[in-house]
Length: 273
Image 1: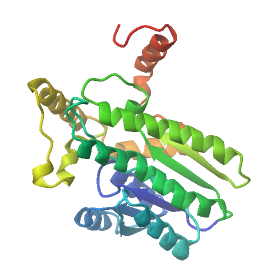
Image 2: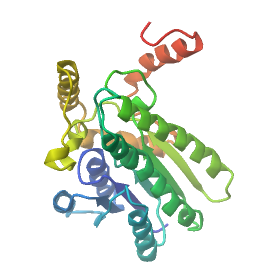
Image 3: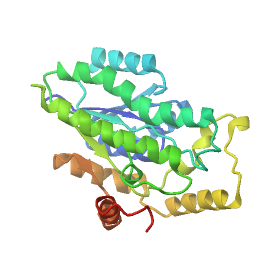
């Protein structure tokens, strides 16, 4: 088989950068995609020693034509994609009713439509490539839990990612090509996800209506800073992929909490009881 090709969105930092560095270290050709040119250049320098190669692309996952152009270019150059990581994501937090329409739309456009655009542009081509392939969509353990105050926009979009990927997995089973899907559900990883508004213009930075919202935000950011680094996290992801798993849970310690939620649903108890 020719060298494996991995396309990774949201690759300039965080989980995407960790996945990119690991894949290059394993000898893959990585197409690292993001809107942040400077951080992509830094990633290029970090991976310059190989043994794989890294190709950077400026991509805005919110735009269907940006993903379509990416897919067209990748298949013209490499003829295949073995791993498509639809990984770009943002976190919008605060009271559900105080987040602006623009903030909600931003979360929906990046976290859901970014993946939809990736699926629509890459899957048809992957089905025809005569090589194994896997689409890995980044959700979150927040895509399995719900009811966390102040995380409505984030958890709503990540639940959608989990459901969409389950559907994609079932649909791909009906095809004759060796293409499948996995959903990645990270717990805490030391990334800038809690500072997602760094990507916005100064006038669009998040504001909070209460001290409790701000305290929750600061606590979440502090906890993430103490979590696994992206470079510790990435090998766990690829190990689970190697084991042909659909549910990628690099941090399975959350499972007892999920069991409590599942039991609450089955027993029809109110959230938090």
